[in-house]
Length: 78
View (cartoon, helix red, strand yellow):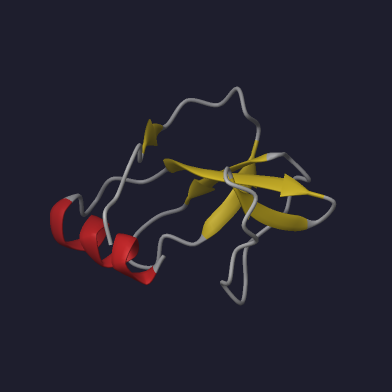
């Protein structure tokens, strides 16, 4: 996740709200392949099932309604 945040800060600074492939299941965030995230803190303030990366500079993941409109990160090669 840190590499992705660095990329966004370097190349897309000033843009807020990015969809990422995280899903909230029973209070824990998972990637689409079923792998649990390793980040220490992931925001969850709305008990929604989808995640977006918040504003720069840290782009913290937060839950949000899956019907909201944001840009998206489709793939990112680490």
